[in-house]
Image 1 (cartoon, rainbow, N blue to C red):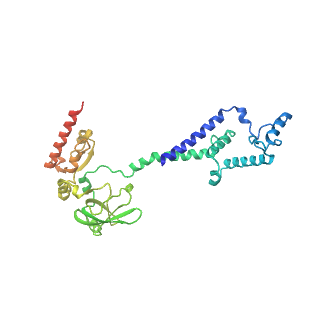
Image 2 (image 1 turned 30 degrees about the vertical axis):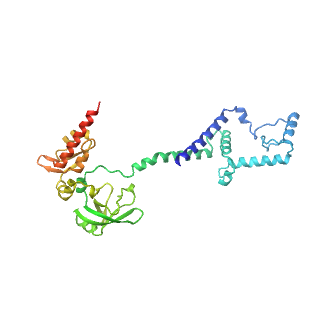
Image 3 (image 1 turned 180 degrees about the horizontal axis):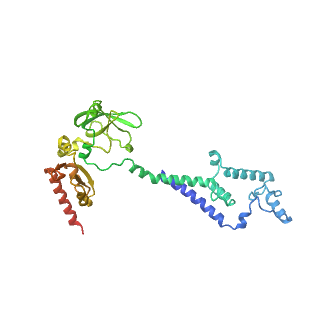
Length: 348
């Protein structure tokens, strides 16, 4: 639909520019020879020819293009001239109504607008053309910005589950029972709380309502949950309400690994003294030297990002913070290294 409207407006603008270019390429003398400035040749031969053509004596107020056919009277010629002059006035008006404009062909509107503008060199385009080009630019801007608005609606920095656990007011496993539409900006999920991994006094009071609040729009980082599913969620307490966000922890309980469940029960809380920094895999060495032993580096893809997210727990040790080795973590790292070696062997 947008493409069809864009092509229609572009074709109209191209037609108008073509007509104007043809008008400007005409001889200057012919452009000055308008009905208002033409000097009539009052010789007897000219009068005879015009009387034969029109059926009456020429007058300055008649349109010179209104030639009469055989058998027409002077009165018929005047009526036709009046009709064409009235149509030209309607086209030249700026406050023309849609009903009046619909009775005139589109090419007539464009040609009349351009020819009117040729006589006025102080204005580059008439009002009709300026409005047409304005709508064309607005339509093009809307088409170009539509994908940008969709991408930039809600953006979140990568955050490890342990970091989300440590920075939240509550972490709980809940089953969604119902979706409540509160107002235009917020919705609430009626939930059953199965287990609470982390909480504080304010969160205890808010969770007693069995309601989790979130923005109603994805553009405001609202969370979409399915009724009947069980999730592990984290959130903040705002004005006595438990709020969840798209940028927070929102994982189906069936999709969590055994290492993540152990981290939620105990290990994540013990590792809150350490920071987990999301780092590009190429900058791992430089960032590790400047961390001072207080950070665990969460390497981006093609680094072991999935291994550190699903099986990694950052804990403090005498030598500094580091990923705690475990059987699932070691197996994931070995699989990652094997996959990397296969990729390198296929490279030229």
